[in-house]
Every structure is written in C-alpha cells, then in structure tokens.
Image 1 (tube, rainbow, N blue to C red):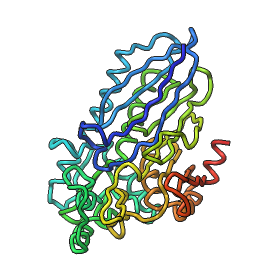
Image 2 (tube, rainbow, N blue to C red; image 1 turned 90 degrees about the vertical axis):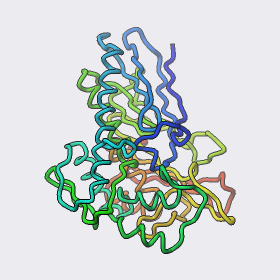
Image 3 (spheres, rainbow, N blue to C red; image 1 turned 120 degrees about the vertical axis):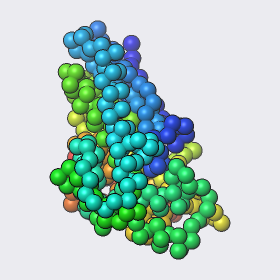
Length: 358
C-alpha cells in the first residue's frame, strides 16, 4: 500500500492554547512521506495535539520490534517536558514563573530552557537583533498575541512604551544554567523557537528507542532522519505563500536535517487600505513592509530552523540573503512581485539551499 502523510497545518485555526500560539506563524508545509509499504519496512505512525497545533510522526520499524504504544508514550513524555518548561499559557510552567518574577537577580533554570534561550541569543545577535524572544508586549499590542485585539493600530507612544522592555541583548542574560532579567518588566516568549525544540526532543526520544529512519513534524516544523520506506530522502513540500491557493512552491528531499518555514500571509489585518502583518520589526516595533512573503530554512536541527525561519522573514530577502550567505544557512525566500498581482511570486535561494536541493 501507499503511506501518504500530506497535511496542511494552520495552527492559528486551532483552539488549543500553548507555547506556539503567540507567534501566529503561518504553517507552510505539506509534509509528504510517499512510499510503498514493503513487507520488510512497516511504518509506525503516531499523531496528536500539542502546542496549539498537531504533531505527526512516521517511523520505519526495520526489526518489527517497535511498539506503537511505547513510541506514543516516549513522544508524549518529551512533549510534556517541553510544555512544563516553556508554555506561556500555563501558570505553573517554568517560563511563566520566570516572567512573573520581577526580580533582576540571576535565577537557575532547567537545562532545556537554558539551551533554548542560549540558541535564541545566538540567532538574535546574528540576525541584526531581529529575532527577539522579548517581543511579547509588542505582539500583544498589535493584537497578534493571546490577549490582544486584532484590528487596532497602536499609538506611537504605546509602541515606544512597549519597546522599553524589549530587546533581548539589552534586557536578558543567560549562561551557566542561569537566566537574568535586566529590566523587571521583561518577559520571554518562545513561540518562534519552542516548537522546533519540541520536534528535536521527539527525535531524541525516537533515537532512544533505536529508531533510525523517521519523520517528525509539529505544525510544519520538522526533522527527518535517515530515509523513507522507499530508501529515498523524506520528501517535503513547501506551500506557495498564497492564502487562496494551496499549491506547492517546491518539493525538497531531506535527511538528517531540521526544516521550518515562516510566512506572513495567514495572520494580518487591514485598516484604511493598509495591510498589517504579524511579522514585527524588532527595532521599530511595527509590522515589516518588505515584499518577502515566506522564508524556509534547512539546518542541523528543528530548533534552529524554527528560529532562523522567523528571523529571515523579518529581515526580508535582501538583508536575509546576505546573512544566510555569511552564516552558511540553506534558505529559500519567496517574494511577492510588486509589479504583478498578489499571486505572482519570485523565489530566491541561498547558495547552501541550492547545493542541498540540487
């Protein structure tokens, strides 16, 4: 038979609140795992809800010893651990406790939270400060957060006030298992990196079960290991960034890599003829105005792919491509053609992306 894992996931439509809902990122993936299910290569599938979206895992059971129950238990345990540490919607989570604590003293945090924040700091510094996990007040102000009201543009004074507690290189310190606010009003939101970290934690759990060939996906962020049942790289479709169309921009085959796409076309509002995207410039506190509609990043793990996809979308194709070349990132930018209709797009790949998909 044919195993077909083909889903369009837009977690913004889901009602399950958790760590990813704040980002309002468009999910642009159509994961495709198309392969003949041969007698010697049974595939074990597990799916469920998490982080305000859904997850799906396909693993090849070469030895016919993989229990679906054991696999599901390992996955749920990994996800529970991630949410315990990083859910902004849980009052008892580690990140919520940190955010509500007004202390500016260095506080001990779990190794998982420290790892994610350290990675976020690295991407922040390498992205001209545009990837920023302290932008929660601005996200809420523009109505794209858990409590904001979409459709109202904030005043200049409100934006300036929110900017005072943002800017993670200035307001946040992390190192040696400690996390410290430099401003008591600073809060961190891990929506643009936590989902990818969750993918990586599931991948680690599968490796612990001895699984070598698998595809893990949470709301469009994914990690693939080894090969699909046909012995080929896992085939992943990148959706064209047009909310009215579900066509594919490109299909790529990946093995042992993380992959994520961020887009601006599913979450926005219009007022007085102006379109306001949920993608915010960390320096101005306002929605970006460039023509880049989506950015896809392939890298060593899903956590970094998740963060860099967001960063590249905020930066836009021109500056993003420069950074992608400097950092050696495999990145695909898709832009609206300003001289054509909204359904015409132009794709530009970094040299590393072109090399990987050649």
